[in-house]
Length: 89
Image (cartoon, rainbow, N blue to C red; front, top):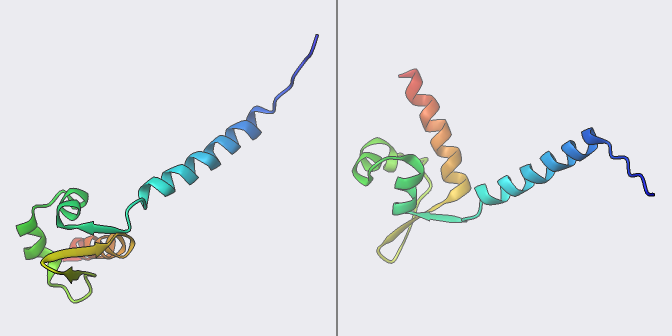
């Protein structure tokens, strides 16, 4: 007969480490957002985005051909800053 003993705390800790890694990977899966993805990520319409922050000089955006692209990480950072500023108004 074989007996196996497992430290549940170590297993749980390892599980959460791996889960955090996977969630981080999913969160930054896309490098660039287009306008459709920006609308989805912010739960805002294109018109609302243009009215609220699109023309803010700090908002990272690049036009390639006729299409706008937004670097995901920088855009997310800008949005969090912008949202925080809205609460102070």
